[in-house]
Length: 139
Image 1 (cartoon, one colour):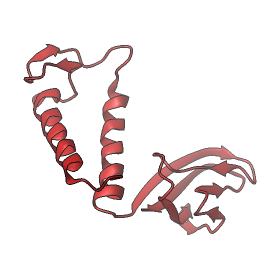
Image 2 (cartoon, one colour):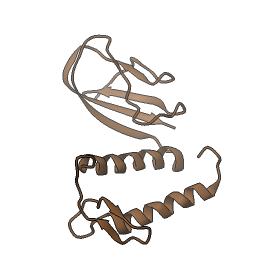
Image 3 (cartoon, rainbow, N blue to C red):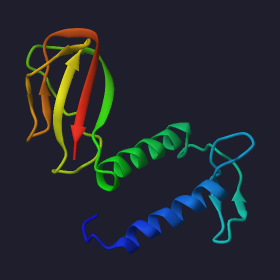
């Protein structure tokens, strides 16, 4: 993305194909801990103290965000549930560090919320409990 060199996208695609073919258990789901350079299974366990299902979900989410923002150049809508906040609390919805991504729209419980700073990337929250927050980010 930084250099605009298409070789980097090609390398990403090659790595993604390798990941999908060799790391993912096609029968039972989940991802193996390690494979060799040729794709041969090295460690077939799918969870350890340092690797859990959370990491697989995080991997998918980050790939979705990177591809949406940097390759497809499309907006992304993220959904949060705020358990509680005090009037004036600040919430940063960005999941990746990229100063070019800005907040386009915010909705609280399906109502438009205008108290956000798109350039600085934060939302000023009202006092609320168990509230659904919807944030649209644009590249």
